[in-house]
Amino acid sequence: MGNIKSDAAFTEYVAARQRQYRRLAYTLCGDWHRSEDLVQVAFTKLYLAWPRIQRQGAEDSYLRRILVRTNIDESRRAWRRHERLGLPSLDRAEPTPPPEDAAPVIAALARLPEMQRKVVVLRFWLDLSVEQTADDLKIAPGTVKAHTHAGLHRLRDLLAEPTASDHKELA
Image 1 (cartoon, one colour):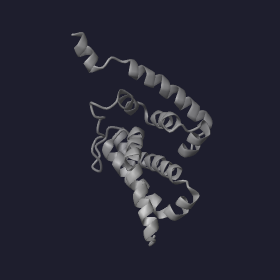
Image 2 (image 1 turned 45 degrees about the vertical axis):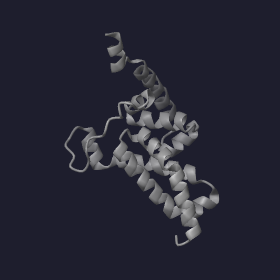
Image 3 (image 1 turned 120 degrees about the vertical axis):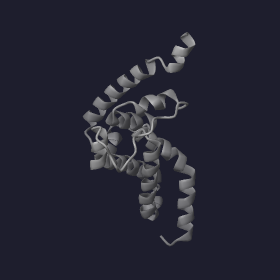
Image 4 (image 1 turned 180 degrees about the vertical axis):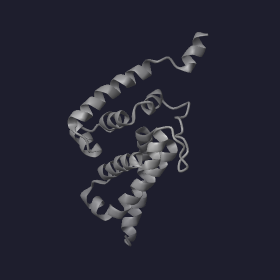
């Protein structure tokens, strides 16, 4: 970019939003290491478009879209298909489970199927409309509604399941 003032504004923006977007990335992909990679790619792409995006005041929406689309692109890569099929992958380690002290909702989100998790996170974590979610994920609004219904139903079931600590208390 070359503009010191613009670089300083970008650095300040990243410092203020990095933690928030890392958490969002985790809720999308369910893996802390992958979430760090997604956020890094998203901030790099934002940096390249920073002067234009900052003038429009669309930094957050642009970064959110980059994050979601990068996650989708990553899930379509050949090595990810091998990982999902249970085939050995030389490129990536197994996804890391959520920390034991993670909030029950985050742990339950990690157990949802990928598209249901994305839809639920965008609709209810980021409070996007059906149309905005459909646009971000490049799917039809009806598909968003179907994934929302199924995801919320599954999330309720997961949150109603007794946990290991519940079993210990009963013993």
